[in-house]
Length: 143
Image 1 (spheres, one colour):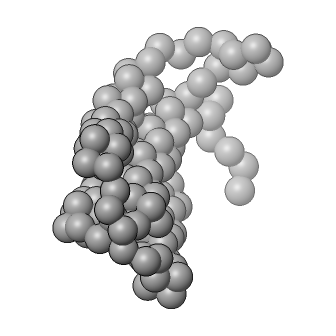
Image 2 (cartoon, rainbow, N blue to C red):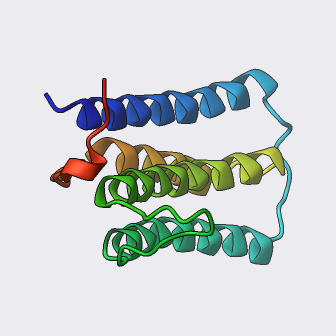
Image 3 (tube, rainbow, N blue to C red):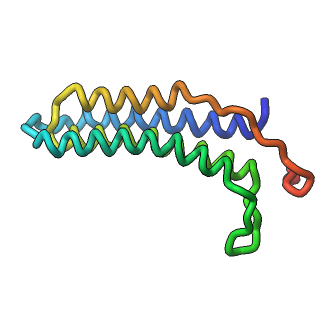
């Protein structure tokens, strides 16, 4: 298997474990249920949805970005953009769980919290790495 895919799959497992640990912490801390403003709850849910959508959009934007030199004079590579896009997608999927975490810590004891955690895990589990970009001769690292 390609080492880049192994690395990205390892990151995927780490993000899945972190979401499960957030859920475990909620069961250990067990904040007292209380009424949460419905408007605030829906703002948090909309933020979670926007975060999930941003993961898909940002990954495509980064993957399709042209090769341009950065401030240090280095040019971005297709492989670097591929890794960055997947890292952003993982981070935004995890942020969905963090929105649920915040909502539960505020005292909400609704199915929305469970749906946010389930949605985050679903985004992380269903994700596939796709095709790894080919490295040019100048991009091949010495191992």
